[in-house]
Length: 325
Image 1 (tube, rainbow, N blue to C red):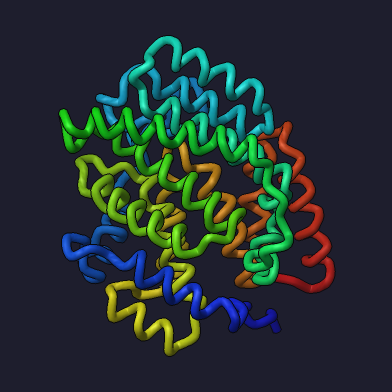
Image 2 (image 1 turned 90 degrees about the vertical axis):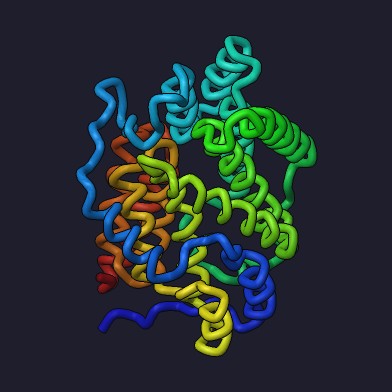
């Protein structure tokens, strides 16, 4: 018999409830039934053509993103290979070439926070599988200098994206830059600083942006990462808190959360590797070790210089040898 799915620690419920109230959809957001039909339509849509120059899917970032899109993809690839210096070299070149590009600054903030996550071992699957690790305020010792770099980059990304969105409220590159910057701030304040109320406010902002990105034609499929994360969090609450969350339009369907992430894995662009990591966490927490291992093996092959993936594969192999599924 597989072990029962783990629930979030009881002491985290009040914090998560506050987060849910802050991250509930706005009045203009899609209703649950509409979200479900949209998700299914996006899952059934043909897979976008892959960029022959790399693993990313061009169609998820549309034509008006400009020539810098592939440059940002190179920077993100370097980041996932733990080549942070190389990532910053690519980003610095893009900033120099186009100082008005908000996505370059957003990518810079992502590279900084990813490096800090790597230093603090936050990316390890067992960190996310442990509720105590997620809530223990004494566990992490962030670098204040790195924090300054992260928030300087997100501030500039927000400023430039805001200017672009004043000219065109549906500017796809600016919308993506904004959601990436907000996502970085949310992750840092919530996971590293444990400032849950601030993280919840930022999550609400990210969710609104994600809904707007999915309303575009074609949608920016990376936005499903935000919605999938919220669905899974709600799904881990006990029935009482899940009831209140559903009153605010959040179903808390963990299977639906996995569907969101699978869309990003299939059709996403910049967040495809991140969606695979989150799906691996989901499968591992749900006792589906083989499915988690498959995703990690794909990431190991795509990013051979990242020591995290073979380390996590070895850990899962140990669980499988002990009788895991």
